[in-house]
Every structure is written in C-alpha cells, then in structure tokens.
Length: 417
Ligand code: EPU
Image (tube, rainbow, N blue to C red; front, side):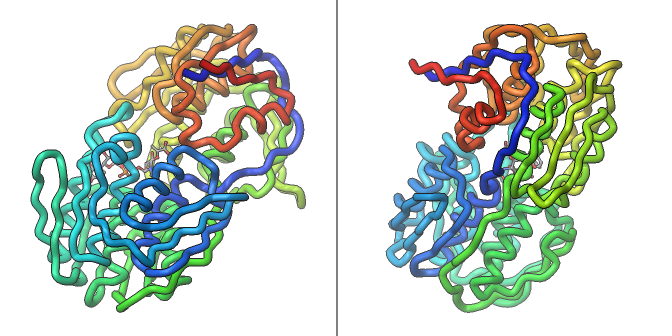
C-alpha cells in the first residue's frame, strides 16, 4: 500500500493551480445519462473517484475517456440500468446515477451504499423524493429497485438539505412531466454547477443556489459541452497548508466567493488574503490564533474543511471548540493528530483543541479523504518525518497532491508498496 513521507517545517511558497471540483464533476458525469450523444466535459480532475464514475458509466454502456482534463462521454448506447455493489461500495457518489437512469429508462437498480467511515449516510431522502415523483421503489438484497412509466413533477421538501439528494432529484426532474419544486434544497456551488450544466443542455431550472429550486421538465437534452468549476475544498486545503507553515502561496483559478465562510474563519486565526491578477494569495502568520467553528450546510463552514481546520487549531495559540453538525463520525483524524502530539478532547460531536507549540512527525493512518488532507496539513508543519499510510483515500479527491506541494517547497514523497 502506498504511503506519503513528509518532512515538515518548511514554509510553503509559490504558486499552485487548482483542479476541477470532484464533487461537481461526479454529478455532472452522471447527468450525461440524461442526454444521448457525445458529451465533452473540461477541467475534470484526474482522480480515483472520477475513474470510478467513468467505469460505472462504461458498465451502463457508455464510452468514457479522460485526457488533459477533458472527459469525453458517449451515452448513445446506454442501455444498462444497474449500479452494482462492487462499484457503489468503493464510491457512494455512484448513487447519483439513480435519478438519471430512472428519468431516461424508467428503470434503475442501484446498490444501497451502506455506511462509511464518516457516518451512516442514508439515502432515504433521495428515495422519498423519487416516490413523490411517481416511482415505485422496493429494496431487495441490498439493492434499490426503482420503476416508473414517466416521472412526474412534484413538490418535495427535504427534511435536511442533502447535496447528492438535491442533485439526484434535480436530474430526475429535468426530463419529468411538469414542474418539480425542491424545497430546503442544498445550496452548495456544486449543485449550482450541475444546474448550469443541465441548463446549457436545454434543461429549465430556476433557483439553484437558493433553498427553493424549480425545474420544468423537457422532453430531451442535448449532449453537454461544459467546464467544471474549481475545487473549493482543494483551495481551502492549500489555504490551510500555507497558513500552518507560515508560508505565502498564490492559488490560481480559485473562486473566493465559494469560500467566504472559510476565508472569514481563517482570517480570525491570523491568516491573511489578497486577491491579485495572478490569483488568491494566502499568507500564514507567525503563530495562528484559536477560533471556534461549527460546520453547516453551504454557505456555512463546510464539513469537508473541518479536519484541515482542526490541524491548524492543533498548533494555534489558545483553545478552539470545533462542532461537527453534518456527519456523526467525522473525527477519525483526531486519534491520528494525537499521535503527532495534538491535544484534542472529544465529547459527542464537539472537539476541544488546545493548541500546542508544535507537532512532531509520527507514523499515522489516513481514514477518509478529508482526514487524510488534515494529516498532510499537520505533517507539513510538524517537526521531523511523518509517514501517512493508506493514502488511496487522498488519491480519491486530490489531483497530483504531492507534485503540487513539492512545487511549493514541501519535502514530500510517495513510498511504494
Ligand atoms: N442525509 C440523510 N438522508 C439522505 C441524505 C442525507 O439523512 O437521504 C443526511 C446525511 O447522513 C448527512 C446530511 O444529511 O448527515 C447531509 O448529507 P449530504 O446528503 O448533503 O451528503 P452527501 O450528498 O452524501 C456530499 C459530498 C460530501 C460532503 C457532503 C456535505 C459529494 C459526492 N459528496 O455528500 O463530500 O461532505 O455533501 O457537504 O458531493 C468529500 O468530498 O470528502 C465528501 C464526503
């Protein structure tokens, strides 16, 4: 299994370019099922999860290739209706094909994703919404079987704003008969990007980015020709890496609007920001200051930045209270950060982080994608060497992470086997 070896203590300096957003690329790739033909998607990151979605589309009968960040997806021959367990268990976002398959074929058989490292993560709200749109749904041997003649518009009010749930139902609704209204919808930039992509192909969607989204069904969609937005969580992770090392890094291609809550929070800790023609320049202070944070749906502070923020707070001056409100088990990085000398206590969904002067390198284990990112951030600032095991988690969501960090002066190398 591959590992990362990081020798910490170097201030990061230089310029880095952000990749396309994984969590926008995945639903937009799934949405190609809705329109027959050859779709062209640009700024698609070269990531394990993107290839898993590519394999799933191939399994359904599509052609898929990715080179130079451009994905070509040919959905002319998509006849399959099944997302098998072997693919869904390696990537939960596979459930994003449910809405498009049902809309295009009136039939879908998709494995239930099961729990994962960060929580139980049910898909009940996706299923309830599809039932409201007229689908009959049964659960059998770990699979969701869904059937319908043609989906019809409905009013769907989510109990909780769910990102992939909003995306699944938006995709289902674009080819449904009549108008669908999604209430308490997720407002994340990735939801907006999916809506923009679908609208560019002929869909009628209003309100994406707000809590109420209205979709008027159309009979068919054109193939997509679309550029994916930059990855705001990758940007946030580079901000944390620059901040914790007291470095100065310019991030090219960042969309600061998507990161308002993160920027505001990092400013409280002493990190400063400057927008220039070249990008967003991030500068770390001599010593970070503690600040409390609570994760919230967008536009609040993202759960996908909580672990990296904790790495920052572990060496800040003072005590920070970090509340995780989205997922019930998203503190897996705590035990690993403690191995590096962090002083973190957990009670339920609240972590109390008492900043220490410095962390020390140690062997640690990546447990999920963002936990891995927090260990990388911590290791960059730690004294001595950190070896991070199970970095396949990191490869799911960060394109070329070690070459990007190396270009900023980090001492980082991948150990094979
Ligand atoms: N929920 C339900 N029922 C549902 C759906 C969700 O109870 O039917 C609950 C979840 O258990 C959770 C909350 O609602 O407590 C919000 O979950 P959401 O559905 O929004 O999460 P998701 O769509 O499964 C996406 C991202 C995650 C990100 C979350 C929150 C993708 C592919 N995944 O997951 O990204 O953490 O939204 O912003 O878009 C990551 O990239 O590392 C990652 C985990």
